[in-house]
Length: 596
Image (cartoon, helix red, strand yellow):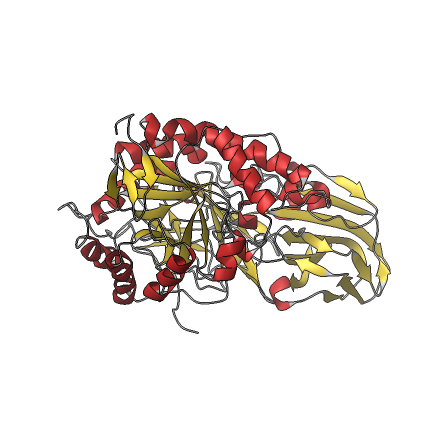
């Protein structure tokens, strides 16, 4: 791309070096794809006929603790944008700071919400200070990669669907000022669902308004045009699929119907960003949750029924969209190959130690009179263990004061008593014998990513009572996610001569298991978790994410760069029980039932 290229908003079209140009983009979140696979996914976008890649930027990933900036490996946004440029495509960057995206806390760092005086997503000085520092770091990466500097970036978005959240023009003006002062010269956009109220609240004069919708394209583009009489019509999020949550069903949208809506946008002269072109995976514990009266945590898979499936292979929708795009823009002759069958193999699971046996090595403990929350402990994500001594004797009712966020396993003297689940609105459980060590293992299943419950604290909220009397004297141990897989090698696991865990009985309650399996060469794998309960899985030290018998998701994807020729190691932290303690890899993905 020429360093003299200028991308601008004209009277009716986008303009590149003075010539009209249409954006045909696809969403691809670098933080949801293994970095060794970025180039493959970008190339397949070009082969579908796309000329632009769009990505969010996840603040909570890049700045997990205030002032600690991470932008390497799977968070190397600069490298990702360079790969987009190398494929000859443009790029759209949407840094939020709020991104929604069914991502943990909507991409906002949990530490933002620990000071109750901080006014998130409004013109409050402490928040503005934090968000300004974040944006400047992002723009250090983006500014030198703008199109007028010879890079791929043609648009940058201000906030995200802000009209559905607030109406603070001073806040939006501050974001614009920080963006321009940081050297961003390309056009700035906003996005909202195309209703007059949201469009008015979510933008400012001088920002180009775009819409988000997946159906009734002609009607919604007409609304957008009424509100913004000039400039290109843009659907910045053309929802071609949907996300899944645990306990619901796998969402599918009809390929022909989606293609017809895409055709309507392009026939009207509009530009489009397909959300998602490739959804990828919520690796680790990055998935968010919704809560509209029922807490609904998002699955590990973010397949989204996208044109490129979770494993990076074309679907029926890919070819339907490609055919539509070919009516309006050049499309390469080459097409990606179909998904091959993955290696199918089995290996026995061998028992490891109970989580409580090895917890001392997995996180630092602190003592508290009253039950602390995760956020009192500055613990952003994952698991924590809370213990105390009971000496009452006899049966008693244990009650959480306000709410369980999000799932709590209760054990007395390391014997499981039961589970308290947020999605079932459970707060009370009977202890058969209120004597001995009480341990409560709490899992944060994902912070809410949309709506008024964004930023809420995690853990056991409102303290814990026993037959109405508050329980005190707690030892709290937040578990370090970086150390968690190492618990499988801790004291309490019997060993074979080669160092692997020996066959034996699986511990009751949260416990580890391990397996080894052989591959001829690195390959994508699909781990079938149907006969397991609920837990986490690592392959060769890489945390794939959560599994849950509740479904709909049945298989976890293991991306090929995580695997290796020869011996591979698998670690499971199972919170409940295995129906069949066997590791099974199957030929393809199984994302669950599609009707409820």
